[in-house]
Image (cartoon, rainbow, N blue to C red; front, side, top):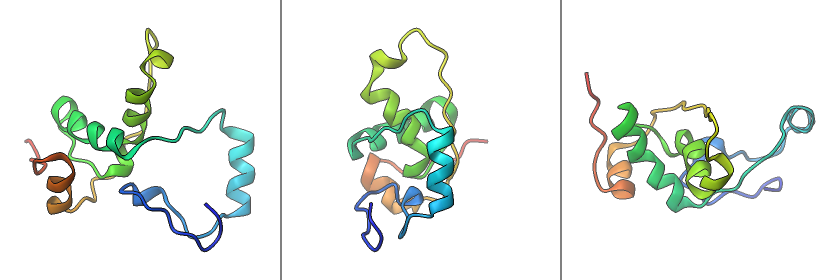
Length: 106
């Protein structure tokens, strides 16, 4: 993304309006890789997190699962961890994306 552009994605929790130089510098030092994922994979990951972990999450929280779904061979036979953070999702939007509203289990 370049400054001033907006990202057209349901994972709006990870978009920004302008790059922050200090953050980009840190990423270059700390990140080994970055992966782009398809919207369909994000949507597929959201109900998986609900079904398997009881988490009704916003699209940004399903990005790690989406990356695994898109490149299963890369992660096969490995211990994989992804950060899942964010349940700030509109119930109607969630329903449109995955076909069912998240139900918080007790």
